[in-house]
Length: 269
Image (cartoon, rainbow, N blue to C red):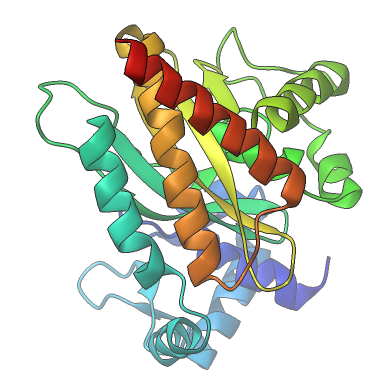
């Protein structure tokens, strides 16, 4: 791994929950010695990607990220195109909706929308979602190329007692995801949380991220499951279109079958 890569990786430790970090915190998070981390931080500070808060002496994002962020969204709009689908998804399902973007071999949360009617709900605070243990991650892996799937095999971190930890078990989950069109994470990332994800595609012709709903596991029943999946199909198709992509024919057919079955269930109720 190059020095530039190691330095830029430190930026991933900033989040809305941790907008500032000290040298020791960076060293612990990155599992590197302080001297090395200090050199990397100094390079980032010199370039304007980070700066020191004069009151706390902790590092925070610097002004250099602002024009890059604006340029990225202006030329490759992502966040703006998920805003409305997320709002509709949260409203129609009554649960927390979130969108994520594939960045290299990482799935990064792009935006989230929480429905306020329930007294209890899922709060999505994770900046990076595990590919093997989240509904979004399974949806992305199932429709990605062999390279990304091979990279995801090791190590398979255990988050709960339900997390898959072997490549064989992961492949079974991915086969089921391709068959149904949805990544299902029933308490595999967080105990008590049921996640359902669908892939989204961009103009590169490949999977680019995912749209998902996270709900308390106890609230999931047949009706809510059908509602979530039906609304995910609508949202995934909308975002894919805005991102200039196309849903693969086989997946489109699977989703059509689900929508048809859901309509028949609704007509019989």
